[in-house]
Image (tube, one colour):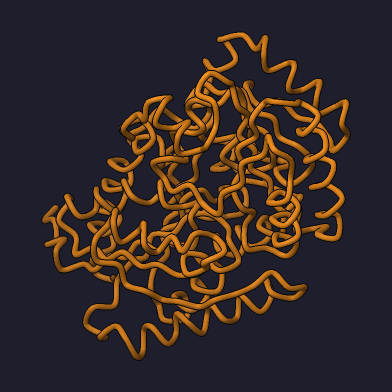
Length: 379
């Protein structure tokens, strides 16, 4: 088989949220090193000042970033409007900013954000093939669950993070499915370690005090509960007294602004940040006593770093979770019992991680090259 000249193939990597940065950096670097003409695109939440204006971080990490901005809020219908605005922003980018000869053959995307769904709809209409990372997961407590499967329906190459997700995609009749594991593991493991003293200075805490990392977002299937749930979580964690609680802003979802206001006004042991950035985010998690909330990072990243984590509520319901992830409801005694249980968690809880052990970027590069070689006549 004669391999094509891969430099003739434009491939883009699209990031729409601070949460997907460390999942996409290593695939992007692998594509560059693999000889593809690779572009990095940014849209969605990256342009929100309330969430740290993370486009600045991306430019530091990547260099040249193609910007596809649209600003959304978290009003009652913002997620529905956000999908449409994201689609329109991508249409405008393709037709008015990016020359047609630089349009990519493929765009690599990750996950399930509503901003991403709108962008993928535009790319699909323009016959640009989608490579979807982390499809096939189930999270019935979030509208992201529907968005994720809509993206899968428009995908040419599926790269789930675990075998049960791959099986779900296969049962839906999709082809070109490859379990590559979590694509952020290599980036996490190679991230420089910040000393406890430096980290404590950044956080504004006593370096000798163990702290809890909290990452909580709105349950978008029932956003009317955001205020009640945030107050329960805040009051319960405040009852821990002098234990520092480190938290960052909720996602740009319906109910997110309410959560941010409650956490930003919490007691003296709370330390609220709009955004940490990948370097500090990983190090803050790495040195935490435990992690609590309903973020997917409690299921993906925390187990890799051997940090006990507590998943609250139904936002992640249905998603595969390693044994080191404990589950509880929005009830104070339940939350406090789970925190207590993390103190005696056995080391064996971290032994069997279903999301792989790294190397996803190399697997992805091989999969794309093989797909092109086998379909060169139609791409």
